Length: 431
Image (tube, rainbow, N blue to C red; front, top):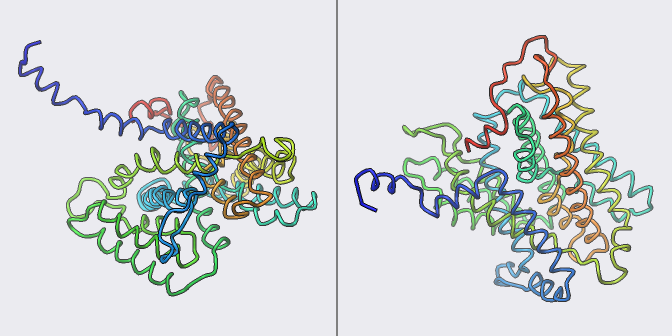
């Protein structure tokens, strides 16, 4: 092959393997696939003849005792690596509130209120079931079924929702983003350890320092890594869950273009951190959180027979659906708020089911609720995995059913013809 100018130009334009890998990890479908692969590997290993090696690895203590950072590998995954994910969530939340789908409360009102209903109804169902079963010690896990896994849910929508209006994806994203914000608030308020105000104030001061730096003319995202590490350590010492430091630091990133920049720093930082979040933090956390051993003791029957399993299963699969659909029905009938153009009531059936994919945040809340070694922990994790799988499967089936049905000119029944020009499949291909 001759090295003509045309060939050299084409070679120069060809993306490098690292760039292609980064683009692949950044795709919406990839996050869900990596989560499933990591959780499956953990479940297989935790129930294999070599399960003791998995438990030993998870329980290995690493870190300096003098700084109170002598944590197990599993705790480092939940408290440390997951902070990367929560930083990315914080950056994305900031962008949505300032320049994205949440900037206009009137337009975002329905999915925002649907998110509240989608958290309240599962919590109520969980509390009712465990109370009726006579398990008062399990009530502390009421927040487990309230969270939605953004990466997993949007990944299923991207794969099975091809041909549907992009407004459905926006509705699910808005719902999941508000859901995550409320879940973070729940973690910070209801699951702190013994609170140390001195360390908390110090952590907030470091976050403020990071916020000052990130608004500077020559701010670089990687400089926030050491700043974030210090804020994380101080937040961990304060008793507040350390991942909250990641969210707060993400909120400090400017969401509007400044100093002559073409794009807001929220978009650039989210793009830079996404491969680390989806490709490393979430799969590693899932690997250490999803390894439920069901072959020891009384076997699968004893674990799956726990009241928390039924409570979480009903809350995620049924409660989320009822909460999202019921709240939307009430809001659209009793208030001036309406669904976005192109979104009909029938579209909310798969959305409500996808909202029942708890996974990442639900597993984290399960550990915070019951801790390691509790009689409820393994049952809660098993229920989260099973319910998320059921919700994903039902959601996928409903998406294909929805995509095959003819759509009217006024899906949201607001008296104005819908102007729907973008489809979910097209949006995914453009990414």
